[in-house]
Length: 159
Image 1 (cartoon, rainbow, N blue to C red):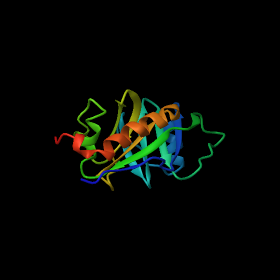
Image 2: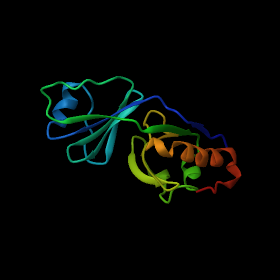
Image 3: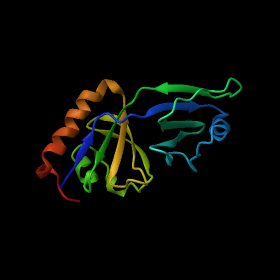
Image 4: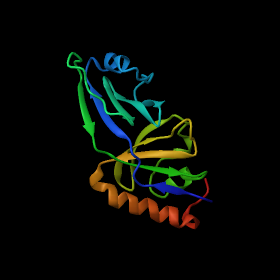
């Protein structure tokens, strides 16, 4: 089994919050998720609906908010990693209580991984991978935990 961990995925992250959020997404030509706690792929990133009038946008581009747009636009500094390989979900069972193998391609979820709150996104275009984003103050810790699982696949129980 080959698992890889890319420890620094270069995505810019933005949080868009407020009653005009959907209009701001439309104005930028960004896709709009259909429901809360879902995401849609956008280039190498995604747009996730985090709650009523709240969106997390991950992409390559800078985003300048229009002065007439009413929502808040905040840049985030999440640490983003990518776990790749056919058994990525089995590897995460070592660190996460959820069965992430049930996360469909294009699925977005929030969970604790090794005790760290994280968002998880499974790109539809690369279903054998998972993006993980979390507070950067936990970066070295979570990188170490995931590397230990990736380096020793014999620890991974098949699902």
